[in-house]
Image (cartoon, rainbow, N blue to C red; front, top):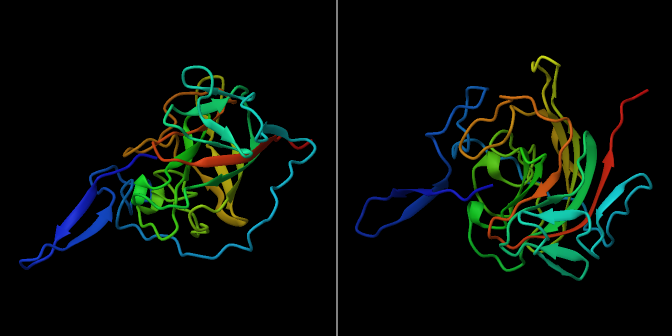
Length: 261
């Protein structure tokens, strides 16, 4: 989500040598009692090589709502009105003009999207290809260039931001298109405002399961622990961040999930 400061350890000797560890140890503890939010000491997921690159975009199923087909922003709105992102060659790209979100709201869903960070690497850690899929404006699945790019485990690509690292790091090299498939089950409150079901998410990154029906602690704030402090509507928009890092998106579709009958 947001870029962090770097903790530098100065080595002994006349020549200054720095070892950098991105993250924080002055943040709240996770509910498991083992790690702080954005803890630089938390073990990072093992790296895997995803399957062969796809040559064509994944076609949307017949019952899907196509949110972006590379032609226009008709399903989206910006922070201050019309979307000001770049539109070309079948994709959209951030332009430092604020986040965007869908005009329509959704409940439980299956979401597919494809994204890419710049082929030319600039920056490091949270300052490299930073973006995010923000469900209902509250729950973030991190987008980041996590290919040979160390950062805190709960902030790398496909993490439930600030909460749960992905099971593996399935990132492709910078510049290549990557896929997210997100299956979302939202939280529920009863008529008295009591939480009756927490949110759960399953995420596939480049075809590999990286979040397996993961329980969310609540929303996903920066440097803080999420919570379900108040009832929220059962539906909401899909948001894409803008963190001053150029990131491209294409082929976005969603399938609302109904109840089993």
